[in-house]
Length: 177
Image (cartoon, rainbow, N blue to C red):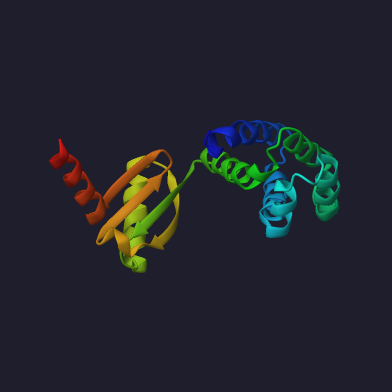
């Protein structure tokens, strides 16, 4: 099963809890810190190591997090450990931030370009996306020379592939029919 599918219900539950308690920024901070700890190579090895019991991992993880987590945050760590899902913390944190952005009317978009974009080109793309989705858009821009030319945009559940690589792949698919 895909990690996002498993992580989403946790993120949704956390988002509801944080919203009810007006603690979205507290949970953002706790999840970001816990996700960084879970992503650490040494901690990842400990989480995946069958020689460590759940209690061992819990003790080490909570000791590292010390005062960074409130009691509900500690309970989340215990729940994830109990269900064998502590390694999903980075994905849960990402899904939580997406929910937070959606509720604030923001949309995150990833723009991948074959070549570096100028500030003007990036601003123009953001404007086009904001008009298309009728929401404020924040972007992460990266370069992937394998696109050959053009751009590929992931905005929420929408993928816009205006790359040469995408067009070549579509053409190859059409020719195989």
